[in-house]
Length: 352
Image 1 (cartoon, rainbow, N blue to C red):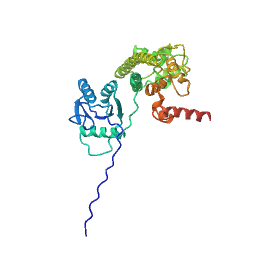
Image 2 (image 1 turned 45 degrees about the horizontal axis):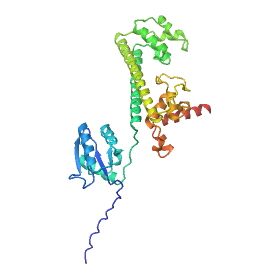
Image 3 (image 1 turned 135 degrees about the horizontal axis):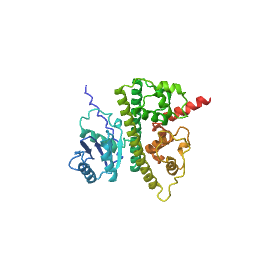
Image 4 (image 1 turned 180 degrees about the horizontal axis):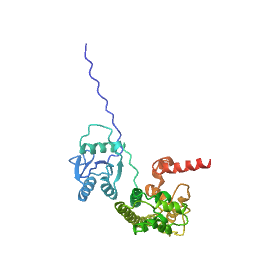
């Protein structure tokens, strides 16, 4: 009986979508770059991460007639190379690593680069959303402002902790110890005042608590080490408030450049005022004028959209809505959507 010959395995071929595609495995010190076969004597080269090395990558890619490049979004190491490639005219895909890590067996950077190049040449990679240069600058500043605000709030919590350790309950009596009344009392305490009755002169009429409750909240055990921590927390709080103010100046300058790039010949209307009451965290410039000029409407008039939230949305998404397939895709990328939805649901619950 004749043995049956083994069946040949069928080879599935993928159509070539990007014939002039390269793949880059990005690292902190080494970038592995892969190009299609036959473009040079070697298919994969490893480069350093210095600026001169990035220039060498650009020269080699141009020599190999590359038009589009795909790279993984590894930490922040991709950003300098990405910016240089975009500036040199390449169509750059920044790819989520989940799209390229589905196949086992790749053991080194060069294999990773070749795998990325193969997937990209077959059109199997989808680029992440990326802002343009102006929006990137605005987004960086707005994100940094948010970080400064969070750091500032942490030192307020440290001040409150020091007050609790001394059994000073002021922060439980007034809503905000960084408001007008709170700051006046804090500075008086740090100046040496310990008599609760004398501290009452700093209490504004808007405070709802009665005088005796405030006096009782300011009687405690004035420990030297806790007073030091209290003062240090307040000094750091003031420092971060100053840095936030400086960041607001930088953000406004960037908004001016953002506006000039889109509406070069139209003067900015600075008379537009926000429809919302000013809040403590509001940027120190007229945000409503920029929203009206750039977006066409004052988006802060929408329920749940504050000045700072509108600024964050603008910096994260820009004004070009064609980058999203639908309104649902746009909304799903916003981290603030749950906050807005929660506020609307809460309002509807109260109204009902």
